[in-house]
Image 1 (tube, rainbow, N blue to C red):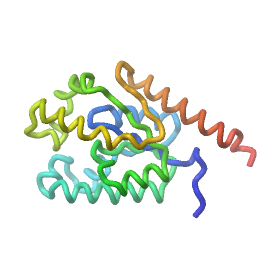
Image 2 (image 1 turned 135 degrees about the horizontal axis):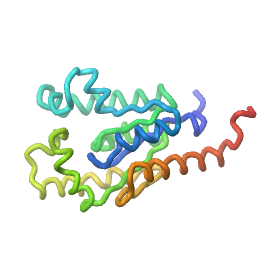
Image 3 (image 1 turned 180 degrees about the horizontal axis):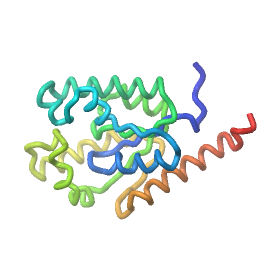
Length: 187
């Protein structure tokens, strides 16, 4: 199978939980006239329960397997999507490899100081934060940062609103698309 044209590739958003991947992804999808998929929501729909309950009932191992299967399948078999992956998805090498080779990956970076301000609004929906104090959360935050080092673009989201981040992503994509294939309609 030949490689997809750059403008047909899925766009994948990675970053720590609570960085805004879903909110920003929906905005980017709207601007690019693409479907948006939040992998956690896809899995929740399949199981008929929230992620937290999936973790409780089936364990993190089963959730991570389903996450891997879902993301790898999307990367290889679908196109023209904007996809938000969970904060821990890139811990799995197969996910990272599929996303980087088949999609355009944006790392949404957020500092610890800015992230701390979001804890109260995200803690109930994040199973991996349950029972952790602020020190444990900081350790997890720091521990996860290296998994995001592999990406195509990085957006530092501190002090930016959703529209500014979406503008940055769309501008970068359109610039890249125009460099690679300036007039796709004329083919």
